[in-house]
Image (cartoon, rainbow, N blue to C red; front, side, top):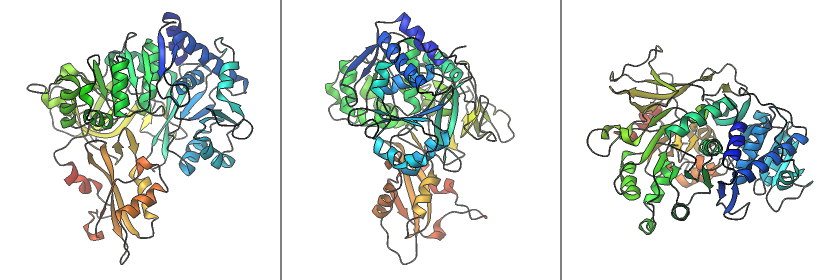
Length: 533
C-alpha cells in the first residue's frame, strides 16, 4: 500500500512545475499566493524537519487551531511526513470545547493563528500535555504568545525528505465528531485509510491531474482534508478560499474551475445570488454534493441555474469515520425527468472497493426492494480503526463503521436514507449534537424542560430548533434563549428557532423519555434526508 507522504513525493516529481495550490483567502498570505508542486513539497519538508528538531516523537499529536488555507495544507502534509498525528480543531471552539479536544487528544503541540491565540492562551494553563505553541501570521510575539513562529520554522528547516519511517498503519489524523454523550469522539484514521481513499474516491469523483478544483470548505472539516489529500495524490490544482457567493462565482469564472464541492447551504446561496447570470460558468463540469441533506427541489433548481437544466451533480455519502469512503450516485444513474428521477433522493451504491450494507435488527442484510428499514454499515480500507481512547466502542472498529443511519434499499440496490438512529443534526455541513445544546438551555433559569431537534431548512439542509417548556409564571422569549446559547456555544450550534410548549404536550414514552421522532414528524413529512461528510 503506501502512506500520505508517498502521494506528495510522487506528485512533486511527476508534476514539479504544475501549480499545486492557489490561496484566495488573502488573510495569512498575500491574496492569490501560488506554489507549484516542487515549491510546495520543499515547504512541507522544511516544516517537517523543523518540527522533528523540536523533539516531537513519532505518533505525537499536533493540534491545528487555524483558519488558514495553504499553510494548513502545508502543515497537514508536514505532520504526515514527520510521522506526527494531525488534530484539526474547529476555529469556532473556545473555552471548555477547545480545552476538551486538545486535552483529550493529548496534543504535545498546538499551531494557532493570531486570531486564535487569545482563546488558546486563556486555557493553556490547564493543558498539561501541551509543550509547544507555534504562532502563525503577523501580530504574535514569540516568548509572549508562543515559543515558535510558523514561518520561521518553515524557512529554516532542511528541504531533504524527513528521515522518518512511517508505517501505513500509523495514525495520520484524529478527526473529532460528536459522540453519544455529547462529547466529541476522535475518529482514528491511519495513513492506509487516507491512501486508499485517494485511490478509490478520486476515480469515483472523476478527479484527474488536469482538474482545477475549488475548495471553499473550512480547512478543519473532513471535506477539505479529502481534497488536500486527493490533490497531493493526483497532482491537480486546488484553489482554496473561504466561501461567499460572489467570491465563489468570481473564482469559478476567472480561474476556469471545472470541479468543486458544495454542501447544500453553499449551493442554495449561489443559485439564489441575484447577479449569477453575469458569470460564465461554462467551464464547470461537475459539482460534488455532500455534507448535509439536500432537497430534490434544490437539485432541480441548481441544475437549471448552473447547468442549463442538465444534471451534473455527483451525490456522495461518507463521513469522518470513513475518510469519505461510502456510497456514490453518478449523474448517469439519475435523471431530472422520467426513468431514474426517483433516485434524486438516493445516496447511490457502494463505491468501488467498499462495502455499504443495510442490516436489519438481527444483523441480516436487507433484501433489495423489501421495504425493510435497516442500519447502514460501511466496511472497507478507508474506514478508521476506532475512536481515540474508547477501545470498548463498537460503532467504529477495525474497518467497520455502524453509521446510526437508517435506510432502505430499492429493487436495483440503490440506498435511501430514511432517518437516523441518533438525533444528530446536519446543518450546513456541520454535525451538531442536540444534547450539548439541551444541557446549555437547561442552565437558563427560566427553563423547566427542553428538547432540541433538527428541522428542514432550504438553505442549511437542517436547522437547530429548540422546544422549550418554561417554568411556571416565568416569562422568557426566543431571543433570550438564543442569546443565552450564544454565550456558551459556537454560533453554528445555537438554535435558529425556538418553540414554547406546555410539558403535557411533549410526547414521552413510559419511561418519561421524550420521543424526538414524534416531535419531528410534522416537520419531516414527505421529506427524505441525504448524505453527510
